[in-house]
Image 1 (tube, rainbow, N blue to C red):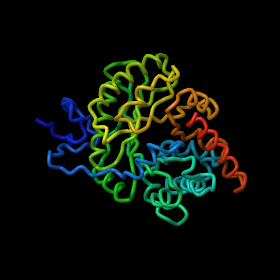
Image 2 (image 1 turned 135 degrees about the vertical axis):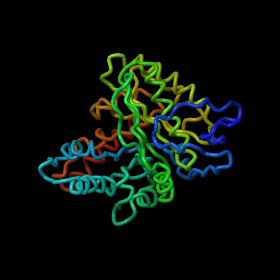
Image 3 (image 1 turned 90 degrees about the vertical axis):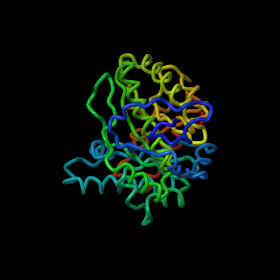
Length: 335
């Protein structure tokens, strides 16, 4: 008997669906019936990601991380008052990046957007349509609402109210996939399993909506037992990926591993479309060097992408700095 809540087409025909697990109240539909249609994913965008060369730009800073992003861009908190002004300034920064001649599908495969950005515009055009139609960049949406307090050495996803409606709206706009971030801080088997169970349960709902999830169980680069965490993480991911149908793959976003090439089995897994790496607090140079030592893994950098960009730069200086950043990340991603 098929398990309620998981569309059967998301599983390989050769194996049974995983046993039911507690979802942790993240907004997952309580029931997806056997007859529920599976919305198809965008095959053109899937093929672009599968065969293209480049990286995924992370432009999804939320309310909590926006002040830091603006400060690095040269805009102090004293320059704005309230969320509306803050979000307007960060959108102007994102627009400057995306509309720059340096930013395009030749080197940037995809871009992850914050929900407010998805509903806004670039260059006077719907932001999602502009990315794909004008730049040839595959659009993604950050759907998580932040992290729960730490328990069992991890921080799980907070509840995601209105998730079904958000996924439907993103699909209608032309978004290809989603991103959802958890954090692992210690080598606690229960905590890591809880993170992965929650992430994969959410991934199934995203897939059922016709979107491709970026599953992001980030490992804290400051964790004392980081290498041991990565052993447990890879083991858990492989076990869960084996239950997914390769026709509906996921993308993994992982911290760069302590051992070069350690995620190669994940890169090669038939149910993984791409493995991408977060910069995780490393400088751009350090992140690029580590990335280049992990063939098959591409970048999905945020702070490392915008490092060196400034609101005080004129357009020529800004475009030159962005071009240098994009080129360095691109080269590391195809090494």
